[in-house]
Image (cartoon, rainbow, N blue to C red):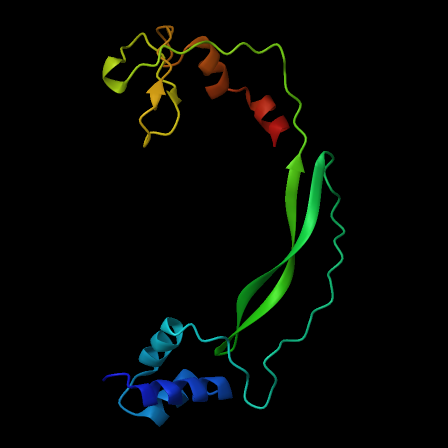
Length: 173
């Protein structure tokens, strides 16, 4: 089945009138419901009106949020469009979403980050730190390479990062 210009125009007209994909397929003839849906998506046709209704959805009142806010967080409310199914029709509506914009981190000044030896994978041994640094897909990717104790794959600095006590992990959440 070929989509001629006339059939595409008829599809657009029927779609804007609010007919379902099955109804449009029946009126066009020789085409399946899925073919109609695929063509509608390829044409990027907007959401259609329900038969006898308007093309806009009613605005919902804002929902009050009673959840307490964590300190050091600045949040903002943003409206963004989402699609939700309503029977056989997908409706687009704008909802308000609370976004976390900023978080205030306190930096420690007593942390000393060791200089890495910038080893490649083939240069690692049992006694070198295997902490990956950077993006593995980039050329500047390397491993720490500093001396590591016999019982750990990481140097003492990276071992503290990798193996945090459970109480400290709970506090960070």
